[in-house]
Length: 314
Image (cartoon, rainbow, N blue to C red; front, side, top):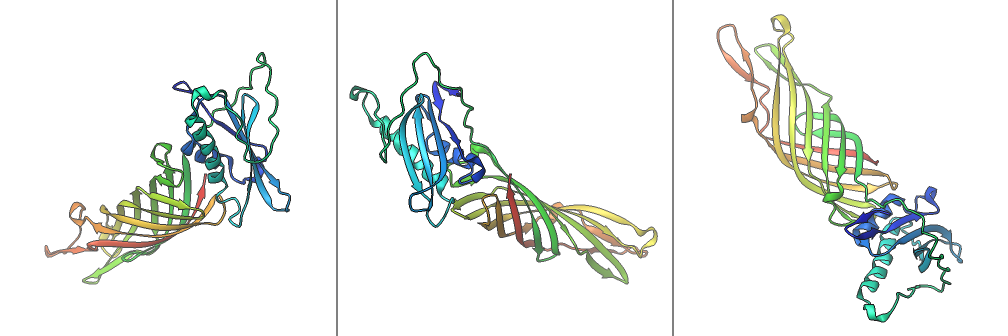
């Protein structure tokens, strides 16, 4: 049992872990968000069972020092397991809220049974309750890959990773994350000046802060976006095939929409837009034999791209 400032952490387990209904870590995160630390030594366990009417249901049992104090059967509606973690967290939250409101003079806590159940006998005082692993709300990682289309540069293959730290999780449905993305553009930018053809290959990296709200299978994200376009320009027809590099920064925002295909797989679509800070980047200059100088591959003043990604929760 983990001690935090004199309080015990509520331990949550499941006897049907392979069912993933709901996933154990997701349920622990929801319970920790609603309940937090509690007084006493409590163990909660949920089990996926088949109800009397043939439908699947979740059976939730809460024990204090091995004595059963709460038993609840939660039927799974048409949404299946999508809201099961939140339902478990809500039941436990109401139970502990009721305990906090009870005055000490009212005597020992009685079992709050939301359906008929026989309390199990307490263990003798000489037998200690088994030590349980601490219930820690995990940080959520998401790896994603897909396609990107930029208004100026065309199609690209994109990959990325998102971290939702536990410290940036105000509630079980609202998360603040940190995302890092990269996109390799498949086509070269090109320009021809006085029969000299100059081309550039671009790799785009981006750092963003997604503010994400989740509702069942749907997730909405938006936040600030900062990008850096790394370009390599070359002129194969010039003597010695000269090439040069530059880094082009940009600042803007993004928005996205996700749909959960499975508990761990999400299909997302979004877009990013903003201004390219061309004044903070080097310029590509084509210098002629006669001393003339021509700026080539001048970037647009703004950028805009659409994204289609498949994300896997780790």
